[in-house]
Length: 569
Image (cartoon, rainbow, N blue to C red; front, side, top):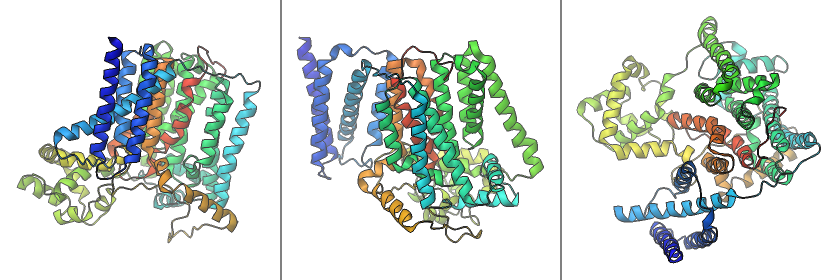
């Protein structure tokens, strides 16, 4: 009887998946992908039926499976265009996608639950660490020489100018500007900044792999991960671009590795002087190299102090050192150096886009609300300048966008904003989903885009900076290689949401194999991603580059050797 019920259950799921997908793809005619989906669902059902006794998971894991399945299917939902014309058919389509994703997620969870650790004890793991470092360094230097001395955008040029004039602006973290000032005293060329970034990123990769090797993750597995870093440009090409995001992303990976050491040693790792200093350094870099890093640092350390309350003293010491140092720099140091404050309007990206979409589509609002937003920005310009994926056309129309009017009475701004959002929830949701699509979407909207990397110094800059061709053949070869990964088949590699799906699955596997407390390891990534989601100004891959770096490490963490403390790692 139980067997018949299970078969009926799986048959019903397969039927719902098939029906829902045919409804969703009836116009696109992508029947091959539908057939593949049904085949995958069938094999998943057979596998789950064969291992039905392995379904014992705690409530946290079940909740995580539901979340992972929902977010993953949402990430791959094709343009959110639903061909079904009724709410009922729409719900069937969504349900079918979720069931398919949940079926695959559950299959992966069952498979991973009792998978052997396939640990391997290397005699000299440090030798392999250096091999990985040299390989990654070699590829990075290849790009550096090909696009010498570096790649620079207007943001890069702004910090370069500040570093040379001493006229500071907090629009970009001053720590990175100071770093540029120090490095150019050694060699006054963008090349030294790119070279420094390459060394930092490569060193952090080496640090992460050294931990995994000493924790006896199989070298073959790590060899595959190394090959991914070497082959896929998103792991190395950004190191030659002078952006604060590169150093910050490396430090967030550094911080994540240290949290992993902290967790698996039950806090004992930071008892050593080296452990304390490494955690302090990674916390400092996370807090200082990008503005959203400070809340990531603060919230993570509050959680760590709670979780490791029996070892709270060193954690509190690190927290206070970094926090007090940040207050000193942001206070008296900024005042002494006459640092211009950052534009507070940067925090209003999502509200700006929602207001614009409501105005563009003639949404419901009172005459008073319309008059208010007309004073913020003329109504005709809201309609003309609105880009669903980028706030820059609105906020950088300097002569018309009235920042002063907004911040003269921010309470009134949010009162009007909340009012029109409540009146136009669908338009507000549409604007939010499009503006934040970089975070959650792998399959882009038809009018969507993602800005990825650059390989040149911004043309027409007034600083006299330009690229130098060291070897035309090398530059041409690099361009041809990079062009391969811009082909449609590889576009998913330039979507941060793809790496988010990998991290979510890795988090699920961590919870299954190492316990729910191990989820503390993904907290910095989660906080960073949510902070970007809350204030994303444009579709720039670099904002979420940390997700790329962290994903390659977290894939391996569920397979580290069990029950081993690591005082020396």
